[in-house]
Image 1 (cartoon, helix red, strand yellow):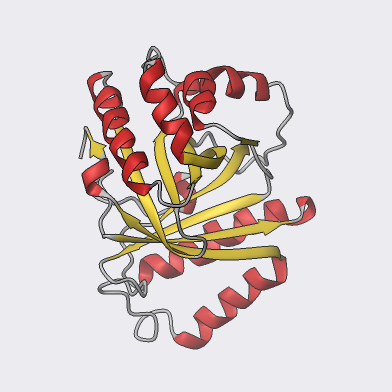
Image 2: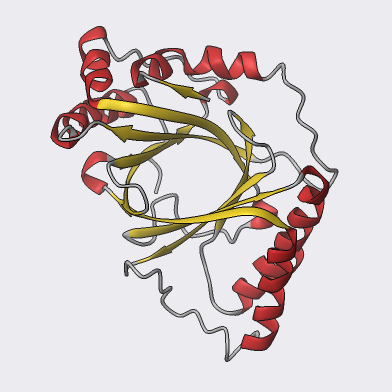
Length: 248
C-alpha cells in the first residue's frame, strides 16, 4: 500500500489496518500467532533529510511519552538511498490509545516525504533466534526480503524453521528476527534481519565452516533458491539519535 503523504499514514494507521483485516489471509497450521510490528518504508525528497530527521525526533518524543515500546529508525546505506525504515508496534493489535502528532508536525513530515510503504509484519519465534534485548545488537542491519509463490509459502516457512534457523544457531548466531508480511503487501513475502557492527554484514562469532560445514550450509541455501520467485537485500544503519527503546 502506497500513499503520497506520511501524515495520512501516521494519523490513520489503525483505521487502515483494521480495514485490511477484512481481507482473508491464509496461514498454515505451523504458523502460530506472531508478534506484530509496523514497518514504514519512507523515501524522502531530495535535500529533505535534515527536515525529515528533525520531524522524526519530535515524533519519537511523542511516541515515547505515550508509552510505546520502541521507535526504531534505520537509514538505508545500500540500495535506494534517501530511504528510511521506521519500526514500531502495530497498535491495531495493542490496547494503547492513539498518540496524535498535531497538524504542524504532520505537515513537516508530509513536506519532506516523497512516498511511503506501510506494512504490518508478523515476526515468528519459530523462525528467529531470540536476542538478549529489543535494542538492536549491531549498528548495521542486513535485511533479506524473499518472496515465494503461494504454493511454496508453507514449504518456505518449514525450510526456514527446520533448516536455516537451526543451522545459523549452531554456527553461533545469537540474534535473528524473521517474519512474514501480514497486511499491506504480498503475504508470501518474508523478511529476515541479521545485525552486525560492520557494513559488510559480517556477524561476530559466526562460524559456519567449523560447525555446520560450508557444504551443508550451501545445500541449505540452495534449497531456498529453489523456492524463491524474487529476492532483494538491503543494508540499513540504525539511527540511535532518532530512536528509542523503552524496554531493553
